[in-house]
Length: 143
Image (cartoon, rainbow, N blue to C red):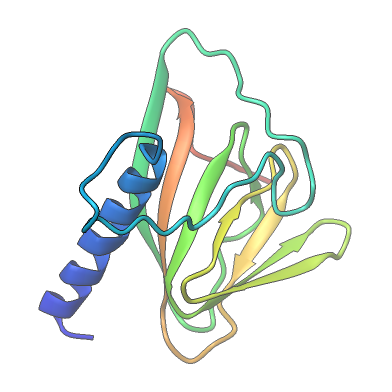
């Protein structure tokens, strides 16, 4: 994908996320709001609970998992939302569950459960990820 098209797709994805977060507001009729995800549970059914940090912080990243690689086993101490921009990512949990998310899928990762994100495909997986954590709290903890 060329840089211009990738940038356009990234900007449109970010705009869609921001628009969805403010969907209760009144907009001109030409504004299209497409809900990507609305849930109170993670991808494995855990109730979403926000931790209490002294200094809350939101971090937004674009993560690229090259073909044939994985993130390694890790966990998150707080909720995060991911949107698959490109490719297919497979999440495997310690108890052997495997979840697959394809391009244009949104999901909330599991909290305090070790898991491994794998790219079993032949092209890079690109994710748009929003972490709802705290200042000086690591985005993930390795096993």
